[in-house]
Image (tube, rainbow, N blue to C red; front, side, top):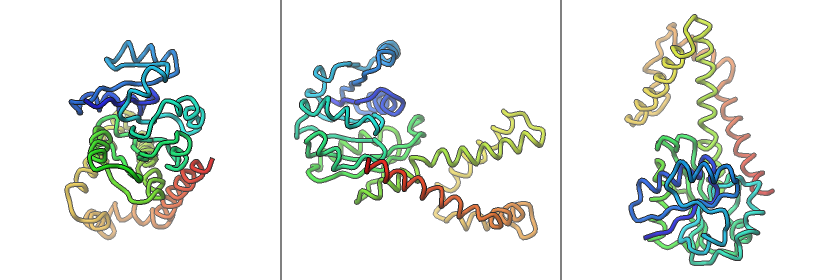
Length: 266
């Protein structure tokens, strides 16, 4: 039996707790939370072990998953650093928080930095992760099981790649929602209700994603297939090109990447 402690009972912490509880048979899952309201909600709506005091749970954990906001990390480290030990595996899903910062803040040796995304809520997420030094093979397998409880996992070999994963997939759902909302609003302008426009757009995105995932062809090949010169799609694509939409998308991803790097320096 492996004892997994989730520190932080917010959205992502709860998602991981419930997914792990459901999918990893030999796991005991607990949550450490300092909000009285959240503690009450967790106890009322889940069967998870919920703790308010670090002294009651931190030292007993085999794996500690840090799911708090990076801005609160240093305060958290001070509150639990005397309770953690080097045999424990620390997994962090805090955006921008460097491995070395976690190591020095907690005085631990086994740290994995990871970045999930919002579709983890429906087990369709993607999580990039970086196992740092001192991680054993069996521990790495456990990490993959824990992070894979919410969807796909992608192992990276350097820390800058985690910031890139943050910019691509961590923030990525917001980019998709942005495009979807613009299309929905245009549908409303054409006379559709919000729900009608939403259904059209959501199923277009979902179907296209499934089609692309099932194929070995790249995106440009699919664009070429659906675009006939002088046709409707051609008119739309020419407008994208005229307005340099691809450049703006790339600039937005770079801005997210740069912010992830900035957060790691704070």
